[in-house]
Length: 261
Image (cartoon, rainbow, N blue to C red; front, side, top):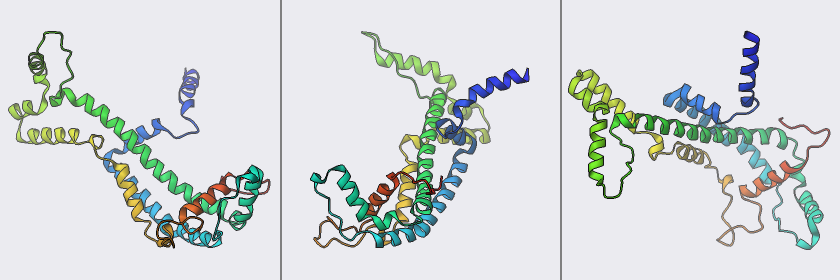
């Protein structure tokens, strides 16, 4: 009996192999709960802070120095091959930087994965909370929408519904029949069920705000523009370096080259 069951379960769970997605994050939310998720988020933020203010910051300071000081867009008459060669020449020092495709990209990947993890956890948690709220609605006097026939009054239907669901409304029932301890527990449970993140609070927004506070070094913003408005051709801001790194990332890996993967 064991072998057929093993084969059946292998087929069922094969769709969950070799990827991390919504099923895993929903399970994480159920397993950890609010307190566990808060601990995990705090530890992830410590790692992100260490990378952004340590390893990545030092690499950015080094790489911004080898960026071309001025990089104007080439004329379109050069065509795709000509423009590609132009940027190959302009970014020669960046492309040849030995640790770019290994340490730098890996550090950025870790930060990106941490941010994505927080986003996916919030999405999974919101779904769990909505499900909890729907299940708890009859016990909190949250009544479903009613269908009104032509000529029927809404007040009459609502009165009937309120009378129908009144025995399920838990807090007044406990307040009438329960002990002081049971009343306190019922009120706390009712409050904790209603006050959910999905009702208007954003955990991910707080995470992004915390991460933004780690980017205080002037290197992330660059010097003030000479024209008082914006840098046009100067490569002194991080987004220029980011574009250069994306260019390098898109270059196919050579036969004898190594990456973090």
